[in-house]
Picture 1 (cartoon, rainbow, N blue to C red):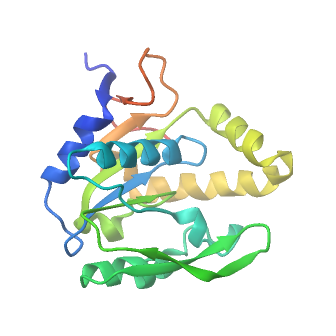
Picture 2: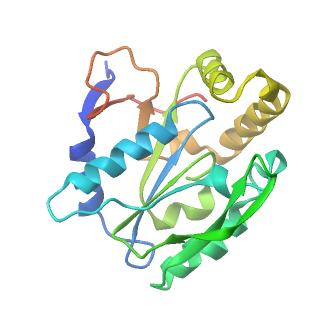
Length: 212
């Protein structure tokens, strides 16, 4: 029987760099999965591992939450990512995007640069969607039990987000089912693992498709 296993971020970083670039000269890594699963932590630790390799540099990390025009833009933000980040990199040019402020409820005027780099990590719900799969060098799906994901989000942002959050969860479940994301990624990661490990340097790989 196949079981979950502990793997090193350093080894995954080396595998990323060994794969061909499919977005211009850039290896595009998508870290997908439902909200509260641990995508941001995984993306940050993979970026740390890439930065630690000899001659390596920390790759830019784009969080799709920064591109959303509010809660209603959960899945429809993609043309903004494509036009401001993916298309320029595809052409060998740096990209830039404007970060959405959830406090001001609008995009900030200062652009966030995205340089042409060996690796770009895009983290967020729908980051590994079908439209971008041909250009991905690595697709990751991070998952965790729904009650834990809900409690993490409430602990982070407060109980006032619950009405919007429940609608968000409905939307992401429908998207993942239609997109078949978890069955089409390269790696499924347990965002709430029970196996003992040093979480700074290792992650737990699940044996098969996840159920978000």
